Image (cartoon, rainbow, N blue to C red; front, side, top):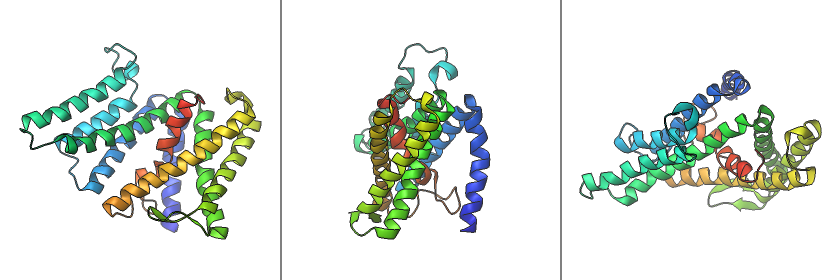
Length: 264
């Protein structure tokens, strides 16, 4: 417990100033986190990150995260980030030719989906911060409220298993508790900072329910990945908390959904 608290405090001391400053600081931090996320997934699968596909997978994620207009101004076109990512896909697929099909499209699928999954998630974290610190905090509060509410309600009254084959400890009661907790926090946030949102309170409540459900599903996806590879945590970079993906699994799903629904 002490180790968890120390890790959380250190992480917040480092992370909060970065979020406050925004801009390049957040972009670099998100790119680093994306790279670590790719590394953790390669590690779970037992693949070397210092391989052609590992390096390209990290590059693909970073290409998605860093805004091309700032970091690669010599490029043109509104889809520069995606096209750079697709360039890494082309190279990975091209290796099937160079290797005379000893490296197949099935094997190429893993590094591609890994960089897409991690890269788009952290890309939208950057976009959320560009829209304002309050929007970013709203996303964090909704995810944290969901996690805390689900844990507390599930521990107290949880009986019916939500998805025992994937995450045996999660319950339906806990999931509903997480949704209610997220909605309460969202309503408070809206009443304190109504100018932050482009939508009315009723719409934001409906959106928050969606975000809470999507966040919990993102958590389950990460649990499914870990169960498939028979590992307890995605990594050990955060003592007592696991890896980066253990901390950001819900957010990698919530941020893109928030962007899709026009919250930022």
